Every structure is written in C-alpha cells, then in structure tokens.
Length: 280
Image (cartoon, rainbow, N blue to C red; front, side, top):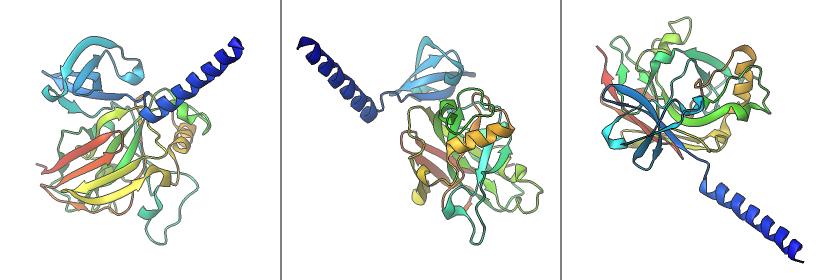
C-alpha cells in the first residue's frame, strides 16, 4: 500500500512539475551582447541585471561572476553570426498576386556586417529613394549543422530574436542579385535579446511605424517553417553556431523615411526599435 501511494505521489509530482514548467516557461533565458567602456561582452539578462558570460551562450559561455546594470551599457545585436540566411516570400500575405509558391524556401544571403543592434540607427543611403521595413522572426543556430533532417532540426535551433530586414526597393530590380538591396551596412537590425525556450512555431509578431501598427502575424503561418529551413539550408551549406535564419516578412512592406521609428515586438523577445537616419 505504501509503495502504491509512493508511486502515485511520484506521478503527481512529475505531472505538476511538467505543468509548472510549461506554464511558466521556466527553461526560457534571455541573452544579450553589450558594450561597456569599449569592451564587448555576452551576458544573461535577469530583470535589469546582466550576468556576464565568458563567451556566447551557444558556445558554452560560463558565468564570470561579474554583474552590470542593463541601463549602464549599450546593447548590441545579441548575435555574432558567420553567415546570415534570409527567406523571401515565406508568408502567403506577402506574395505578389499571381506569383506561385515554391516547394522549397526562397533563400538568399546577406553579409554579416549588415547586422546592427537594438540601440543603433538604420542608415538611409544617400543614393536610394525608397527603403522599406520588413519585420521578421529570426532563429539562431546553436551547433554545427550539416545534412540535418527535419525531424532532428529542432536540436540545432538555440533561440529566437527579432529582426528588421530593411530593403532598398529601388536597387533590387536594377541589380543582378539582392545582395546590395538587402544587405547594405546599417540595414538589418536584430534584438533586443536572444531568447531560448520559446515555441518558435507559434509566435505573435506586431510591428509599428511611429507608433501605428503596420505588420501583424504569427509564425504558424510560415509556408516553410524553421525546421524545414534548417534542413534545407544544411543540405547545401554548413550551418555554424551563431548563424542566423530569417523567417521572411508578413503582409505589406512600406517605405521608411528619415526620422521614422520602426519597432518590432515578438512575444517573449521584447521590442526591437530603431530610428531611420540619413546616410552620408
């Protein structure tokens, strides 16, 4: 009798624990990359306190014991990728009328040097007359991925952040590739945190231009989900820790003007906000 009660009690505790972790997102952690006195560091953000790490969290960074108030440092993009993979036309409401979807992700790349952080300005080039916002969800790869199956792809996804894929609309039709129109310096902001433990298959995204909602959607509506993209990309390229894969944008994309502020909010990640400034 005692053994039976003990086993029932254990099952009760296990069920309670699973319910608690699922409801409280107890495995979720927020990571940042920041600059203080000219030194760039990684850290885990707990409330308003950053607990410094010896390296990027996806590179097994350990706590150093040092702490700093978030408000006394400059937050950088919470990523440091070798390669940046982007996806075009991955939401049906962003596909032009008459254009067909493809059985594989519409993939392209931009240079890692295009990435800026949540406290940086987006640069409006002097020779472009039409740059536009594109709010996206971004995943960060946690370990080397080569020929990964869709079934195993989740094991290679470390966390999620928000991104604004700024695009020079007047450059894209004139260039052979999207490299310049999508990847010029100061175009692609990411942040504010790198968040683990989120259900990247079901995340709400809301984006606002000067406070007014312009884009709204959910990652469940992606045509090619992140696990398919990890598998597809790793079939042809080797993904390394810290590499980025962007979801593609939702709805319509409109022009940004100097002085505008665009912010992207993803549940569990926070708000990525950047101002548009004139390039020199």
